[in-house]
Image 1 (tube, rainbow, N blue to C red):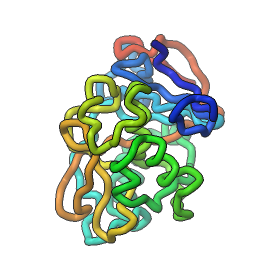
Image 2: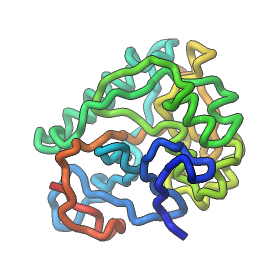
Image 3: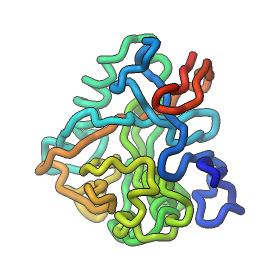
Image 4: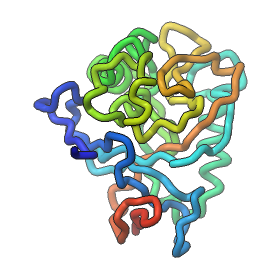
Length: 243
């Protein structure tokens, strides 16, 4: 079975955004980022979420640590301490300028959606209300973000794309993005001022207070369109190297 899907309008239950996305248990989508060592350190292993337009979107393959989404009772991403202080602050500044310059400043959709649209339905509904045609107009331009709820939904094998994401624990053995940990997404609960979506440790989706709990984060970002393939098969022991 293919591990990459071209999300056209003819692909059943797809995002229909002409993206290419990896899906399934363990596709060969590893990239070494932030290191030129002959053996890529595990901390520098990232994975390709997909190709969106002319940009490749990556996510760190391991945890960057556990953080609160925000230090105050406010689920607005632009003022989130996780955004400015951790991801686009400490994490980004920890990369050399060479690697920082490979990361595109991207316009992220951060208006969020209701819980019913986020985990009360399948991946397509989450996509439509989170970043697609029914999404809020709120955006933030930045280099580093987190996974979208729909990124996580579409990382599962395509047979799960119609499964309610509140029941995505049934897909945890067929979703390469699942880590078996509580993990934040970038998306807020739009009907609340204090909640954001997260992945539960069994693999399903729920939400949590942004200021009340520290949860694992994995930085995610888009490579610049000028970044090119150099070598590698995409396995964890032979990750893709980029120019």
